[in-house]
Length: 190
Image (cartoon, rainbow, N blue to C red; front, side, top):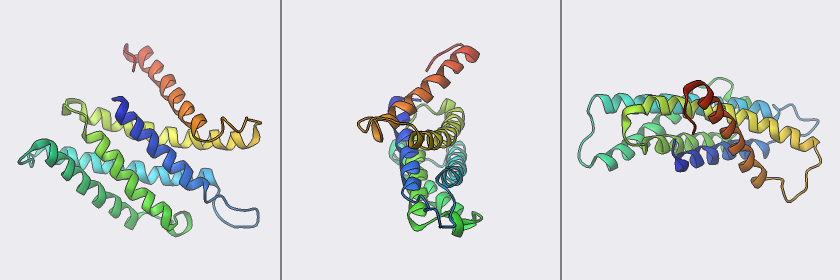
C-alpha cells in the first residue's frame, strides 16, 4: 500500500471517528455511545467498501474497460462506489437508531474515497490482496482509534498533543506495529 493510499485510509478513519465524536450522548439521552457508533459506522463502510472493490474487480476481469483505461477505471470505480454505498444505506438494519443524516453522508463520502484510493494502485495483479488488507486495516484501526479516544478522555494529556496530532501519530504506530507482524510472518516490511 503506497503512502498516498495509506493517508487516504487514515483520513477516512479520522473522518469516521470525528463524525461520531460530535454525536456523543449526554448522560440523560438514550442514544448509543461513541464507540458503538464508530463500530457500527465503520462496519457499514467496510462492507460497502469491500463490495465496491469486488464489483470493480469483476468489472475489470470481464474487460468492460474502454477508452483511456486510467480515466475509465476511476470513473467506473466512482460510480460503483456511490451505487454500493447507497444500496448499503438502504438495506442496513437499525439505521434509524445508529445513523444520523451526517453519518449517512459520511458513509457515501468514505466509500467513495476508499474505493478511489484502492483503484489507483497499479498494476492490478495484487488488487484483491490490497483490497482485503485495506478493508481490514480500516475497520480495525477505526475501532482501535475509538478506544484510544475513550482512553484520552480519562488520561491527563497536554492540550497541544490532543486531537489531530495525536491521532495521526497513533494511526502510524498502529500501522507500524502491524507491518512488523507482516515482517515476522511473511518476511517483508511495509
